[in-house]
Image (cartoon, helix red, strand yellow):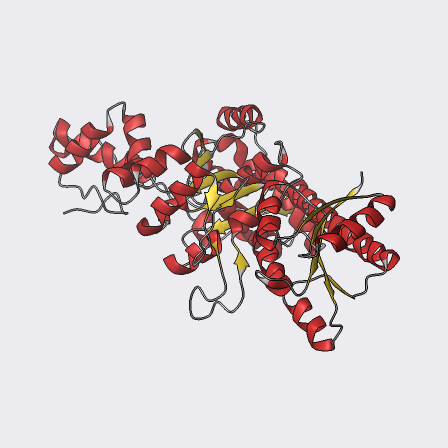
Length: 462
């Protein structure tokens, strides 16, 4: 496949001369005499290398380098100039140029520079692909499990991986939402593209906006250089919005517009940049409740929730606990060079009866703890963390043999409702589904029982 070159110079005669010479050397060359036309063409097509003059009438080669870096950081830029000073070379390299060549241009030297830049780009892409494959291979085992709940998740994953539709992954912390997002990417059509993840809860609104959309130089006090946003960096791949339920409310309409228009405007910018990404979002929040409480935009929720993947908590797939534990034992023992091969019966009983509020992540941490302390080939209960080996079920008894201890039916309902909410960590949608009632009915009952419907702790009272 011929190297695709975009040549930018306001001297049309020079462009034609260079184009003819490079075509004879087996390059595919397109030229533009306007920097803005070149940037518009770059947004529409794909090029392996950009060759640009340093001194032009519109924005100049240095600024063009910055614009290319903001829009397509993967495309290397070779700068041409009639002023072969050290200062010009340093300015070009600082602006993001890959190489610097003085005029008058020698075609053989330019061809070598272009091939070297194209090879550099191909190498970077190959390294990214191999790193991604290595990560995916390591992470796939995190979906171990043969329980009916996991079988359903794997079946649904296989059916939606090839789709371009937006996916919303929900589940408690530690259930493997990012693992599933990476699998969706690696098994889909965009596997050769980048996987870019951003935690929407980890940054204040202005910083998150700049990270997602990018910014131009001078957009704010510390914006000394233009920077591409994560939406631009994920071009041809997947953007993973982790903890999307915690995205600042003021930023949500801007994200909605990007998802609808498939274009992004950098902070401080004036032009729209097309995007080509698949969006996968994840949250441990009950977004339907957040929509009703006006903490999350309903239109954005529907835009994200085209395909819904609900990951089951570990306590609902008890049959997977020991296989997962054995998998982690094998990995950790190999890493730490310890002769630990399995789990003693009493330790296995502790693992099975513990409710795992931290899910798979907590189980993995537990096994690392136990292997570090283990003295024998089989993990003993004494090797486990204290709260796991000493765990006692806290289920509330709803009946007793002594008639004086019996309670009215309404109290039974209240206690059971609290128990269900506790089990699903306050997720009202999941609780209503388990209880077999509508969410509105659940809210009415919670209010009647004096339970705070907005509290994170499902047992909180008004």
